Length: 373
Image (cartoon, rainbow, N blue to C red; front, side):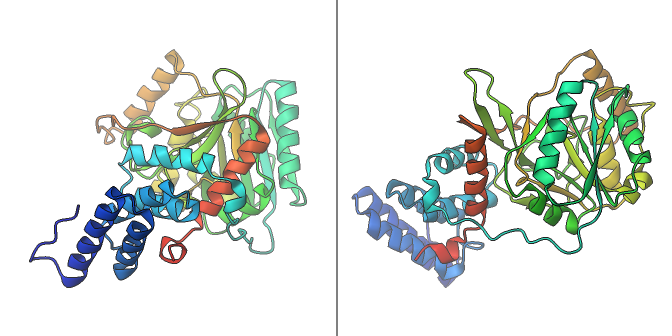
C-alpha cells in the first residue's frame, strides 16, 4: 500500500488512496474494480510521474485478467522506470512469450529516410562455408538495398579484418559482422536504415556506461539490447534481452562486436588499434568506447533481430586483451557490477524468433496512458 502523508500534494494523496483501494479490491477478488482504480491513478498524473508501484500493481492485476495489452504496457513502463527490478523484467519477457501474437497490433513501421546510403558488409571469416551462409543471410535481409559484401579472409585479428574491408569500399555506411550471424526478421533493412539514419555507430547490444574491461562491468541499469543464440541443449533458440529500454538506446558508450554499423568516414577518423588488440577480443569495446569519447552518436538497436551462433570464449587471449584494455584506459577502474545478466526465453524455430521480435516491437509501441481505458 502507498502511505499518503500530509507532506505530499493533493494528486499524490489521491493516487495513494486509489492504489490502496485497488489493493483492497484485488485482495477481495474484485479484479475489474481494482483495475479501474489503478487506471484512474495512472491517468491522474500520467505514467511518467505516477508512483511506479501503481504501474506494477496494474501490470499484475491485468495479467491475472489476461488483459495482455494493458499488462504489458504497464509492465514495460514500470520496468523502464525501475530497471533494477530484475524479477519484473524476467516475468515480463515470459509474459510476452506467452501472449498470443494476434492480440498485439504491430508497432508503426520504422520508415527510412530517402535516399538510402550506399552500404558495404564486411564479414571477417576464415571459413568458406560459414562465410557463404553469412553472405546469403545479409543478401536476403538487405534485399533491394544496394550493397556489397566484402570478405576479410585471412585476417589475424578483427581489427585487421576491419582495416581490410574498410580499404576496399567507398560505401557511405559499413557493417562489420561475424561470420556466424543470422537475421530472423523480415524488415531488417528498414530497421537498420532507420537506426543509422540519425546515428553514427549502431550495435545490437551494449552499455550506456563503460566502467571497466568488459561490457558487463557496468551492470544494470546500463545494459541494453537483444540477441538470440542457439539453445545450449535440446535444439531451438534462446531469445535474450538485456532490458526493456527499446527499441533503441542512445548515448551508448560500448557495443558488442557481433554486429557494428558505422559511417565509413567516421570509422576512418576513429581508427583501429591492431597492434594492441591483435586477436578477436575487446576490439569492439575499444572501437565503440573511443567513438563515444570522440563525440560520435552511438546507439544500441535492440530491434534488428540477429541470431548469433556462438556465445564467445573466455580464454587466455580474452584475459590478455582485457588487461590490454585496462592498461589503455586506466581511469576505468570501477569494480565489476554483480548484476549483469540476460533475460531469456526458449523459442523452437527461427520463425518463432521472428514472432518474438514482432511481439516485442508491438509491446514497445504500447502507451499505458492510452491503452488502459
